[in-house]
Length: 297
Image (cartoon, rainbow, N blue to C red; front, side, top):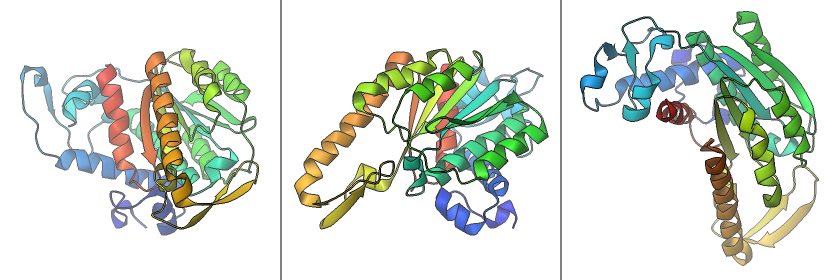
């Protein structure tokens, strides 16, 4: 199956996996969909800041894209001079039991694989850390094709279900991260609210930029209209059955508080926060990723 046979702008990560289990192909489809969407977007104006630039054309070397301009205008422009834009990208992906439910792992692994594919096109070095109750995999950033294939292999494996309720493992992860470059943390952040600041704070020294992708399911954002609902703790197995109407107000307030706390923590540490829903096509997440990076440059 070719990338042209899949339209990533209309499919969620889980739907992409149902079309093909080839993670490398899925990543290529998502990246091509992201670039195609930018190329097709309406022109947002021209000014003196576009001197020595031209619009991106399919096949252009992504190392020469001016991401600062993208952050301002959400359109790709290519520098018409050589520039060394190589950076180290380190992906930190939560592979605990709660991430194995409702399409979260598919969403996280496809996003990470797409960033690996983009790093190859930009000739950037990329690394990967998978964590749950302990560090499951740690690959330091490198720029070789064999290294990227090993990262994709690790992401394509279905992780063992493991509980992750302690922030200490993320402290261990942060100690392994390079002190320069970009760190991308992908997780559902299922930690007690009183521990969230400590968990996120471990990454203060994790590179020049830190971007958090908060993976959420539709049910975590909004309860069904009516009826009973069964909640199951994917990490402990504990189950509770309750009436939707009886908990709707309290549930909604708790979710909003949880997200707001996480966003405030990111703001305090000068990290970028991106909410990533499992029912949303992933090219949009890539656009948000580069918009965030563009605003920092």
